[in-house]
Amino acid sequence: MPVRRSPKPITDTDIPAAIARDAEFAAADAAHVSASDPHPIYLTQAEGDSSYPRFKRSIYTLTTATQQGAQTNTTHNLDAAKIQSVSALITINLSISAGFVPRILPGGVAGLSGYHYSVNVDAGNIICRLHPTDSSQLLNRTVLVAIDWF
Image (cartoon, rainbow, N blue to C red; front, side, top):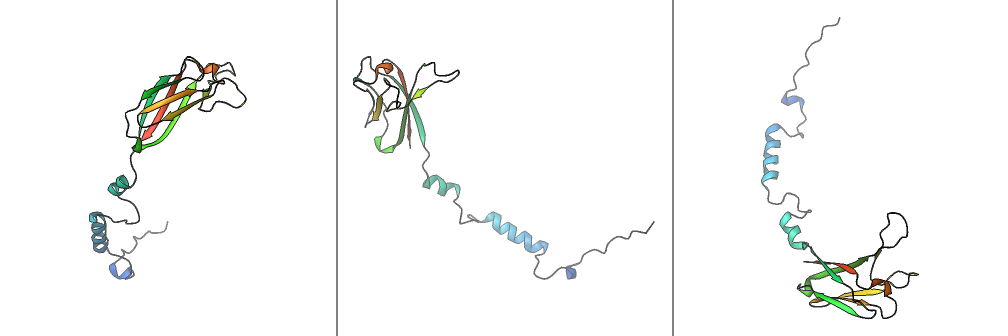
């Protein structure tokens, strides 16, 4: 069995001069950690918070009118200038296929008569209007409205 000898320890003279020593690395690492913005190409948390508003979502429900062509509304109490998007849907019970629950978006469904409505948001109200002749299946239904704002 060959005799195994311990390798010769590496000394400072064995390391090329361009490679940082422990003390140089420790100093550079400490400077990096203490820098207020060591990566200026990335946003800091404060910069990100000020550049991108934090959206909030408010959910409202209202009931459609009891006759075609009529409208219902509810107040939203939001600053209209801060509203970014509005989405609405009505869930209906149809036997289309097992487990499928249709959700009707404003504008209705092409080829499916009786499901045409619109949702609008003004400075203080959410207004749901039923189509005058094509909303017979949406009478007295719950409308879910989501408003994203900041």
